[in-house]
Amino acid sequence: MENSDISLTQDHILGFLHKSYQNLDRKKPDRNPSTRRKRLKAHFVVELDRSGVRFGKKLDAKWPMAMELEFSRFLCFPLSWSKPTLKMPVLGLYDGTKSIIRNLIIYEQSALVQTCVTSYMKVMDMLIDVPEDVAMLTKSQVLSHGLGFDEKAANLINSMLKEVPITDFYYADEWEQIDKYYNACWPNLIEQLNRKYFSNPWSVIALIAGIVLFALTVVQAVYGVKGA
Image (cartoon, rainbow, N blue to C red; front, side, top):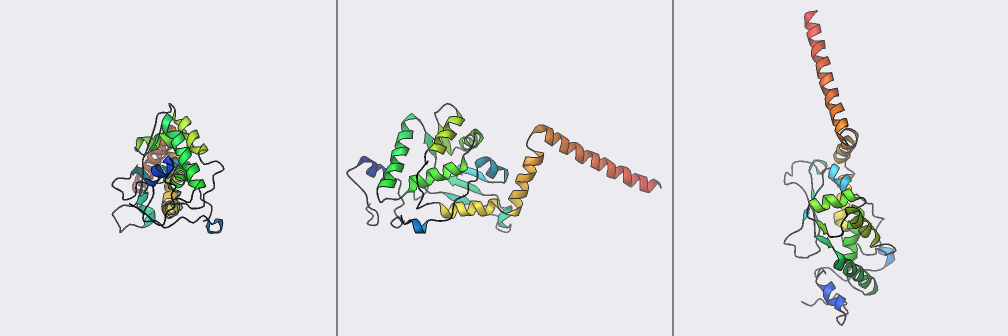
């Protein structure tokens, strides 16, 4: 299928490969720096998980690189109460795919084509900071790698876009939804409680002990009043 809005270098193998990732319904990319959106804020997987965000594979998408933040079907709940799932394309990192991704990113920067691969790797860079982030995405089957250690995968993803400008971010709407959800009152409260009381087993034990002690104190006070 041809798309007159997209300029491709068809005599280059990367052009043929890149075409399979493009969104044919999207207009010609805008590389004007003046149209660049506000600076994107990272939200790492571990933090999003604590605030209720889940991750899953995006299946049956019209566009292979499509990404969507799906909220609960219980529409009666406000946004901050509805736990969403970020549906994403699967990323595989192996010895043979590292150079392919890098070459596709370079190709997108040098030709007037959609920056879908660059945008996707930007999302991964904003989601992944530590090996625990990689482990969670791997468990969700959004990410797979054969690099041996999760730390190596995290370092590779974080180094993919060094000194690469993002002038046409394809997931701006989806990331704005994530940012809006994360900054809402309820997810922030949940994350703070998780960090303070559920970060390790001893915190959980201390919290339970405190609740039990408080309950016993209340019971004792009630019986003391009745006895008086």
